[in-house]
Image (cartoon, rainbow, N blue to C red):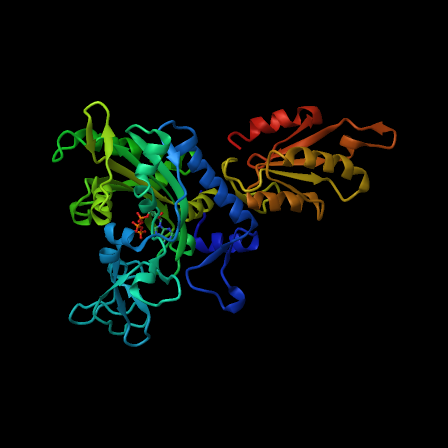
Length: 462
Ligand code: ATP
């Protein structure tokens, strides 16, 4: 069962060092969060799992890390300067600002209206201003001269850095169509949306890939291109289910209807997750045709094409773009992993049942007590396993409480060193340790010589 509500996860994240509200000592800073020691590991593991599936395990995709500060004309060509807008309304009474589309969709609760049917402020029922278009890009100034030529934008998505490097990658890596370029990095959007934890933040991480293919034979009826789009939708859905372990019943595909699609798009499907407040987007998979490469070709005056050696013609490839939110996926991974169950005494046991590949800590080495006699073997094991896996060493508090703590941060395996391991009085030690499984709580004795092999089996993909 997933977490019952978001508050449960928010409080666990703070208590256990996953995610902290940013700048709390200054009273907080809306829609910004800091990732703590465990959050940073979880984020890294999800990013690595994506990179592995999208780049390492494929021979048709390569990686890229483009500059965050981007030439301003890139955002003119992409359409972001002109159209990356949200309609905003302000409450004339309490001054709270709302996104009109979200308000009308009921994101802030039941829509209140005046007698003429106009929506009212969800906060205090106050009258709202006329909607104004608000560009979501953060602007920054470069250099010392404050004129327009020095304005730059922080990237609101990662895709454009890929498009403008298309030729560099083709030429340097001798790539033939079809092939993809993948990138993970921070994006920034001046979002006006209160709440919902890391679901929607000002600064977030994305994992995007542009898959370039031959243009379809028939532009109006691009059957083979739409087939490729469907293949990517299926592959991405399978990744959430099979690699992250997200329950299929809480995942769905939502196809955008005509009204939602941009004029150039041949189709977009969102992978959505059933959040505690309803369905929300995790990833968009867009069939963007040749729009972006053509637009950058026009804006820069440098046409971006691919030379087809078979037909000896220059062509503009078409693109499929799976664009996922890393930080949003992290929130889902936490919600899904959260489990409450009764322990052997009937008390509540909280367990984060992460797949081992994403668990922030893979192993905890726990000597039964602080007794000096246990320490040398426990430290030896700690030193042995931590070179391969993220490991914690903990000898404080009772063993039961330490198990609970590791359950609550989702550590798949605990290794306990006791007096049977090191020997006591006349009895020689057996050089074996206890392995405890997080989910079943089963304990087995393993000889130290076999430990690494057993751990490898228990921690697949780690
Ligand atoms: P939404 O409709 O939720 O605003 P979007 O359609 O604008 O999302 P895309 O531009 O398709 O989002 O970005 C791809 C992914 O990036 C989204 O599916 C989401 O996971 C993530 N994402 C977008 N905006 C944010 C944000 N402000 N905070 C966290 N993640 C985000």
